[in-house]
Image (cartoon, rainbow, N blue to C red; front, side, top):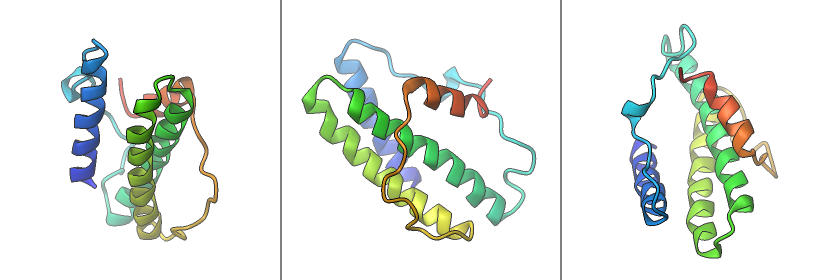
Length: 120
């Protein structure tokens, strides 16, 4: 999943750079996590489910919001990869890996609000 996320970053950074924007870097954020987020394998999986649910929803929302058709396919492919991550983490957290037929798409505001919990 880490390898996938790095590849996703490269892809999105390329899209942003191509549009004349500067991609964000990890150093641009101060990350914080709820207490005990990394205290056990189950806690890590539970955190992963929350994050991957947000990431999947963010990419699904982006596909619908993109105006440039050439960008829709790469973003949809990232969403598919995030769904794979979510399925594995959900199973590790004790849930069923195939629950939703239609995962929720998030608006940029909803995605930002969901991620505010982990950044300051």
